[in-house]
Image 1 (spheres, rainbow, N blue to C red):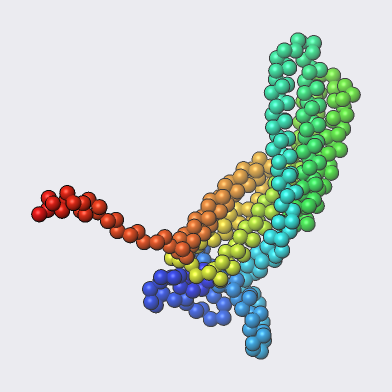
Image 2 (tube, rainbow, N blue to C red):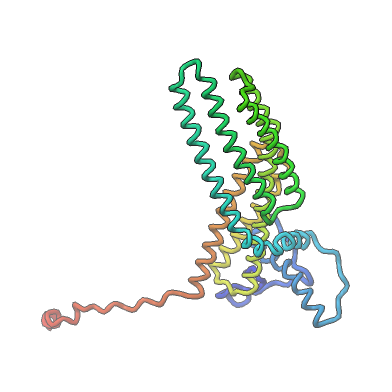
Amino acid sequence: MTNLAGRSPAGAKAGETAVSYGRVPLPFSSMNRFHLTTVALCTVFSFSAAAYAQETAEPAPQEPPTAEEEVWQRRFDRAEGFRIIMLQTRRGVELFYSFQKKNTEDLLANRERCREDLRRANRDAQFSTLLHCYQRELVLDRGLHEKKRQYMESIPGISSVLRDQALLAEDAFLPALDALLKGVGNDVFTGREDLIEAKQNLHSAYRVPALLAELRVEADRSLTWVAHLLHQLFLMTQNTELGPEAFEKTSEAFTCFEEGETQLMGLSTIEGFEDANAALGKSLAHLQTCTDLLREAHRLQQLFENPPPPEEPQENREELSPRRRWKNL
């Protein structure tokens, strides 16, 4: 059995060495993806090996890249420079998520307050109370979408096409929200039915497209994270002699991330927001299991590199006591 770097894992038996398939390793097989993880990563290694060959020998004629090489090249291109930019913008992302959490808490508190106000209001004050409640909710919603626009404008790891689509959707949603907010403030609506219809129109015509565009941005950024992690897995296997247990767990993590990558790619073909939102939630839950596998692989590798000291035999103090020696006479 070979490890992910094309080497036998530490502790492998004699004869269990890497298998050579010529200039380029065999492509990844869907029937035994777990066991051929090493083949896929060896394919990546062919890119870095080519640069070394150009310095030490005459350049060989270039052949068209295989499908697997193209997949890995796309991953490398996507992950290139991501870590540095991600670290530079991490504080801004953390601030956005903190704001989003606080905004959600304020929204829930407003709805709870509105339920109490509506319960106490008499019949003549019911609609005016409802308008005030909805006005406060629109103000909170506007603040959140302004922050979302700033967030999507600056976060790394997403394509320019999806970024532009998301920004256009927000640019359409915010003026529509402002128009509704102005109408509520100027008492344009005279009945509950008119208000509900305007709210539904805002949701279906502007909010849902903005949410769908935002969802696709998050999915695309998750794809960049997956590409980055797969790249790191590759580097780890090139620079580290993995223990047998860590090798197996790393192989599981690789397969898991690849499956998550496939799930995320499928989101681009889903048109309905609810279906796309459910699919993204499923993909992110799957990726969380992959991250857990990666952590476990790291833990096993730490144990392999730094095994605990063997336990010293405990001395039986009772056997050495004068009373025990006297009884044994």
